[in-house]
Picture (cartoon, helix red, strand yellow):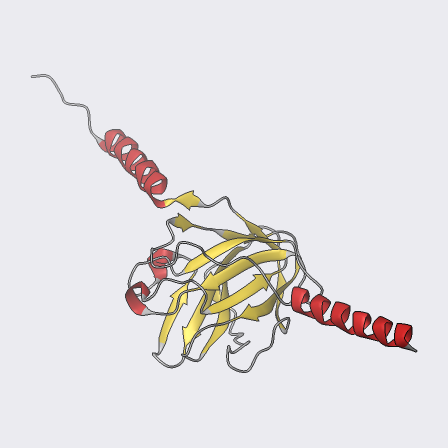
Length: 201
C-alpha cells in the first residue's frame, strides 16, 4: 500500500511539473528599460491559415491583437489580455506565401495602437520584441511577438501582450544602427543618380 501511495504521489508531482513546463512559454526580452534596437519584418511563410496563440501579458491596461496583411486591416481583433488563457488561439484566416504582415496591439485603456513596424507607431519607437519559438504542449512552434504598450516606451519590458504566430517567416532582425547606415548609403546613391551633369561653357 505504501508503494502505491508513493507511485501516486510521484505521478502527481510529474503531472504538475509537466503542466508547469508546458506553460513556461517563450524567453522574455532581457534588456528591460532599453528600446529594443532590432526591427523585424514579417511575411507569410506559405499559403494557408495564420493563427495567433496567446502566451501571456503583464499589462494592467486592457488590450487586444489585430493584423494588417499587405497594408490592409483584416478587421479581426481578439485575444484580449485579461480574458485570454495561455494557448488560446485566434485564426486570422488564409494568407498567401510572401504576404506582408504587420501585427498590432490596440490598447483600449489609452486608445492607442502599436504596430510591429516602428514607423507606424504614434511615438516612432519599436514596440515589439520577436524571436522563433520551438513550441510546447499547448502552443505550437512559431514566431514569438511581444508588445510594449506604453507611449514613449514606458518601462520597455516588451511583455505587455505576447503571442506566438504560426505560418510566419521572420526576417533576420536588423540592428537599428546598421539599418540607418544602409538607408543613408541608399540615399547617397539615389541623390548621385539624380544629379544632372554640368554643361561646360
